[in-house]
Image (tube, rainbow, N blue to C red; front, side, top):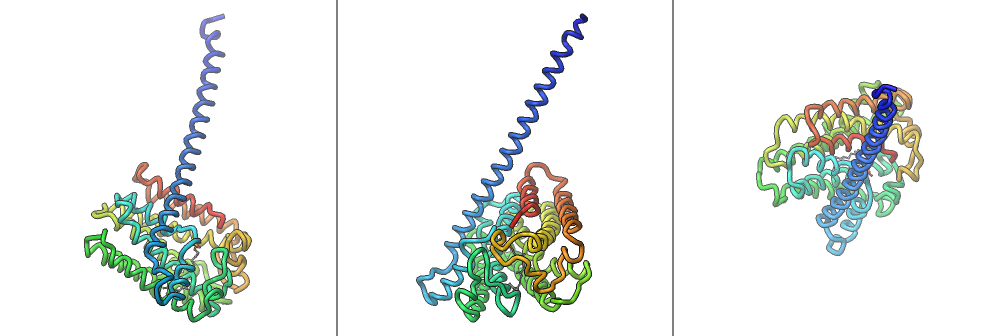
Length: 329
Ligand code: GRG
């Protein structure tokens, strides 16, 4: 037997062992990465909860019931996706974590405001939010309106009084981004189109336009506020964040449409099947579940492409894109 033949099985064995080793290390690395990203999410959600808690008016000061209702609507629930995006984008652009806290909180507060108003009978009319009675069910319609009004003001006050953001231009820029995203060319405008199109079939382009405003604008604002929390963010990085957030914001809504059609009320913490009940056009009614899922994949790929120039510094954003597109509630 030639020496090579003698060695061959041995080499194969070594090669196989090597492959098995590599695979196991890869698995371990993936699972470490996933575990550490999961841990990051839990950690940042808890951080956001603390920041919100500390910056919401206390229920023991007047007007107590309004403050209690504001705290009820903001605290103790929600995935905090917008805050996570702000932290992810901020970290990518080199912002200090504590400088991202209040801008991220302000977006979560605007988001909570929109949910309170959205649940009211004159809007989407839902009794359940984040697994508990909606604000108007708990506190009545008039108080729920005031909760929304007061939360909106609070969000802008938090940025304007943020002592860690010492550059006035930076604050103004953030306030401007948040105002545009929540106004008539953003979330409120998207909601108006939504209300007007109940029972009227929308084209795919019309649906996209509505969702870019209703859901996408605030998600984009969250990422941009994170980016602008850095003292001097690199312009190319801000552009990359913006492109990323545009795609992932729309993907978030397509997933929302799929979940509304497929998931149950307990999992969602809000009433499932509302879109069909209200006879609304959604990505599922226009495309069907499987093409809607394909669209999520395309938007995810677009979001990833926006970061393709960057290395591991963009990994958090990449993992957030996975988290958003693979979520089950
Ligand atoms: C707030 C300016 C302003 C106007 C109010 C009511 C309204 C106009 C807008 C509604 C916008 C709205 C409810 C959009 C839906 C967005 C959406 C998919 C919400 C669910 O977000 P999640 O899943 O919720 O992030 P959690 O509970 O996890 O925070």
